[in-house]
Length: 445
Image 1: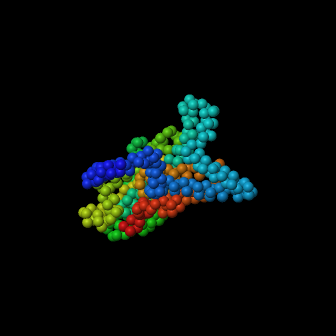
Image 2 (image 1 turned 120 degrees about the vertical axis):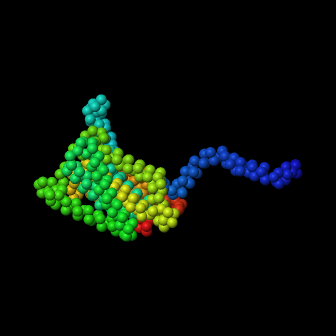
């Protein structure tokens, strides 16, 4: 019985094809019934253990949310004054109230929606403008995110070319100055006036970015030092312009510019009751433009090649210095656009505090977005949501204003440290890359 069974196997041994043919099928087929259910689960677990960018980012946000909830809970007066048995319920209540207030203040408030339709009804709500109360939180999130997205792009674009643009603040101030002066000092037809102010804001920031690129290309001066110094220069220059009515100060001894003309203001997207304006569309268009430039053009390829290795790009015949100048010019223009959207969209005048901390927050947004245009958009919206909801979190959940800033800082802390997340969740180590590597290029370019 055994001999006849062995004979076909010995005759099939010299021929490699029949022997090797069934083996892979048996390997695929034997677990086949089990792997049908196993494949998705195993692939999902492998993706989690792999620790890729998406996995690390999601786990970082989840971890930051938990840590932020603990911080908001144990800084709440109700928790600090609770007795022993009530600490955990009060802590849960405080943390939940913080994130509910964050959602209601940045996206939509369900209580407002319910009250609106209960009082007015659907036809009245849609035709009489009451819906602005419902969409106001989302509108404020987009308003706060607009300059953050543009300034974040101004930082992330040089990352990919191996440069570290710390001068978003100075370039934004330059855009503010030019857009404001064109807004109140020049008379033009309505649509043209707004467009000219936007172009002027871009040009103001671009000139400053071009100066940084030229200094680096011609003298080798490091862009980090030059841009840091220019931040001080432009801040004091704006203060100087606002010190006299013969320059940009409005009459009345107030260190503020005159209001720009109504023709120069950016139109609102959904009526006058919601502040979201065309500036948000400009920010999204610029994010797409940066992506297209870097991934679909020869110029973008050269910029990325220079960012990977300037010496190798020079050997390949690329003009490294030209790429430095061009990328800083575009980055400066994007930051200048951020300034233009502020003065034309919401502020309508400029004082010494109009530019705020957008230029420095842009570094955080670019870091959180991992230097990618799409990531910058989402990071800008996240920080815009935190900004828009800060008032709601303080009033409804008694969350201190500082905790809102701590939440953003904690999120950045975890996302900017992928090895920490991989260690905490025991993920596999991946190849070096990401925003940390990109940032190091800027310092060593």
